[in-house]
Amino acid sequence: MEHLRVSRPVLVLLAILVLPSLGTAQTRPFLYSVWPDHGPDAPKAVAYADVGYGHDLFATLGPERLESRLGSQVRLGDRATVIGQIGWAAGDTAAATRLRAEAEALVSVLAPSAPSVLAFGLGAASDYRGTGVILGRVMAGYRWPRTTIAANLRVERPLQTVASSTRRDRLDLVTTAGMMRRLTSGFGLGVEMVAEDLEGFFESDEAEGGAKLMVGPSIRLGAPATRWHVLVAAGPVLQLTHSTAVSPSPAPRELATRTGYVVRTSIGHRW
View 1 (cartoon, one colour):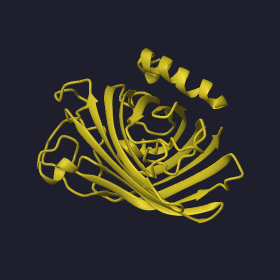
View 2 (tube, one colour):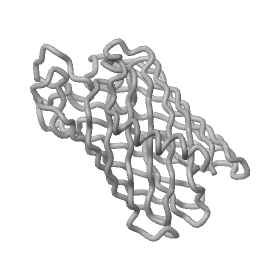
View 3 (cartoon, one colour):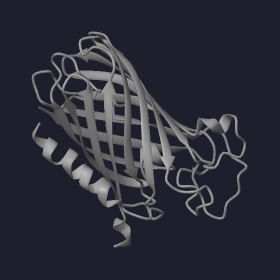
View 4 (spheres, one colour):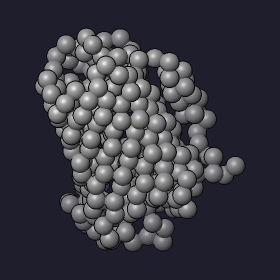
């Protein structure tokens, strides 16, 4: 049972968030950036299933090789959004557990009818190393009739010491950004970016190997008349800086020196 070491409270919370919400959905314009939609025509929730594959990845992109995810994003009233997600690592031999889980609650501070979105969130996760993590998020975005842009800053506080064998920074920053342009009623083209450990530009001994980046194109299929949509995003994974920190055990988000890649596909249904 060692491979299923996930915090029981996190699993219980996700069971509440993910499974019941399959009956109620909300359209996602991005794979990696959160968009809490509270507009007058916004659906109640979205349920989705993702499959990703890649090599030389960092934590936000997923484990090595194949990963699948099941999640939901539920709108509560005019301001609150709850997100739950469970991931399964099928082929990463370095993972201490095959299961990861996370849940977040976000509150939007601008009027639901405004084209601008600003939201703050808090949550918890258990990663593929079996480490508990406290999450915080700041999200900002804007939606034109055909174009949507968003940026997220996610703060992660691992519940462990730096001296742990699964070495991580005391505080990790994850930055995501995306733009999606609707070209026809059922087809959108965009770009997504994910960056981690950008403090590596200023700290030569950054604990997790240095700054990392993924940027690449994305497409979205799904006409307004249908409740289904498909998202696909792909791109190279780059190690921007290299840390001088030395450890007998690699950090869970440390990359090899060569360039990697990731491809992720998501199918979702809204209510």
